[in-house]
Image (cartoon, rainbow, N blue to C red; front, top):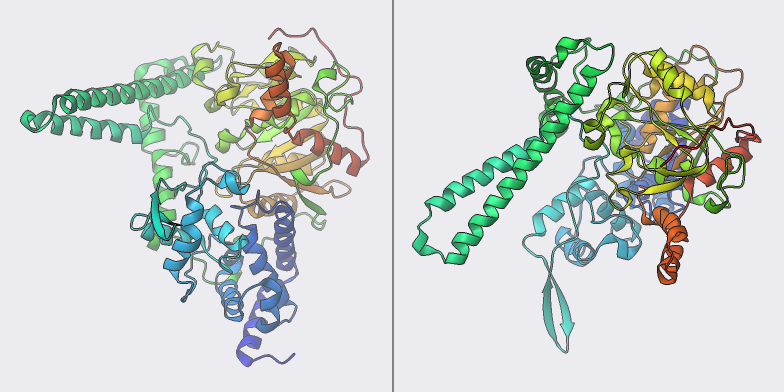
Length: 632
């Protein structure tokens, strides 16, 4: 097909910038998008609706198609196809994602004002759940994806949609409804937030959140203004009622500061009181000095500045928000995933990228669980559950996806994951500082089926607080720098399956490379797979795992098949309902919880069954060592 010289020149440069390895990366991006789009409404916010259009256009261009041929195949205009290819040529594969900052031209009748009035505003008036989209409120990413998925626009960027909403939301926040020849203006709060979900939980680097200190200062300022305001200009209700509200607000903020200060202080004492620690570090002056130097001033420890220190957070915010500080990629050669010199002589292993809800259903009978039979009706599966310490808010998925009903779960913790309740009652032996203490702790583990109290790790889950679950124990050894590697290898030998939860993974401070390296090298355990939630950059996760593979110095005899699963953000009432329905004595309540539990999707059972069938192995521990059952 004849092509213009300009387009031909552009295609030649693109083809030169995309050797075979980068073409494979592009195919992985497309495979991931197709897996996400098996559930299009659930996946709104992941960017797959936009990325698959741009990535398909790029793939067709690399195969020699011109923009006129590409445009109808990807539902984009020819001019937009040319712009996408130009963006990729200039900025690399980052331009395939809706987070890529650009302003798409809009003309009447679909200019920015018309888009806001006819498409964005009506949707923001109602919560996304009404359209089958998960989430309490609309976010920039979900609005952008939904506009493309619904056909309101052919393509969009998150930055542009956010700017449109910010420009018009205060000027025009009413919906006009025609009634009997007239119109009625309805106004209400927009179901929208500019905040994207934050997978990284608060790490106790300071006695209190700085935002609370700022709010406390503002309350004091308003109290000062209130006290100096002439009393004759306000009613008694305003004078006493407003003052009371201000006092209550100040008290609540003060109590929050006290709580967070107590958490920080107790954490330092637990760290210092563990056998093997320096007793001098228990003094108030030593604790204060450590906090100021490491977490406030950001002084390097072992040559590394803490990412979540005040200095580290300030540097990260500056680089992400100050325009002239943002790192810009000038050419496709400087892409997100840099070309590296692989050490591993083996080629990349085969990949399977799936959505967890697309896996076949499996039996799930929690009433039949015994020491020798799990909820699938099979021998219990000892699971090693690995997660990103920098994303502590995601470990709750360990329980609500059903892993404790398949068999004993083993997950390593660090001290910053401990809640206030556990810190208050912490014993001197809570932290495991050396291999010997790890071995003593693991020797006490029981794997019997029964009713267990939820670990304090999960007690901040609202409806799950203070309750119990039926299944197998969740073993949570709390390790330090001197014990976690030994604990990992010891627990790995004990387990049949490893689940690597990469939710919240950030390539700038990823973690888990050591654990992934261990699994890719042959384990144990030999069977493993990777999961990530809707808020995680799945393509970065996949490429980072493959990067670990490329740097293996001791690869296994045969390459394993790497399985990646997109899963839901799994705090749900249906998980708890399956236990409540068994305990209820009232018929009506038993029926209510039974109906609610029917909507529970046990991701753990489906994933374990898929691994077993695809690998043709028996995951269960047929001869599980059983010790006396622990009391709840």
